[in-house]
Length: 174
Image 1 (cartoon, helix red, strand yellow):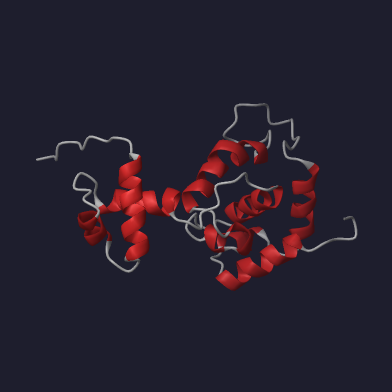
Image 2: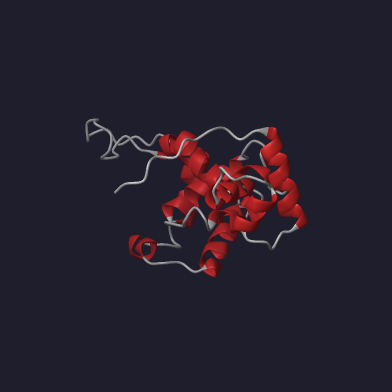
């Protein structure tokens, strides 16, 4: 028999304050224990963890994304890097995986699509890219690094770090 659906409600300031207090006071305590100490009976461990990691953590950067961060997200996404790995990059430190994923789906995905993208119902004879020249320039600079076969392979953290360093290095054009 299926479980009855849980009712969702917004977090209130008092719950946030309690969660912040107990997580900073006891950082190594499991979420179930923090939930009990903070008296959050109607919240489960997963929602407490999600709230902390995406909204309440003190080192979360909630500011605007820079153009460099956007470029890095686009290139890491093109390599198939997971959302969870992206915040570990030097330029994306302080960003939550959820914020990066939201940035991709709400802003960057549309700007990196091409007219010839098969998901778009447009004529195939038009092959005009819809991205800015700076992104195209970086892709051209990096084209000799990775072939289509490489992109399908899995990359190590060192491979990705080297690629990111290359992308951010100045060129003769700059």
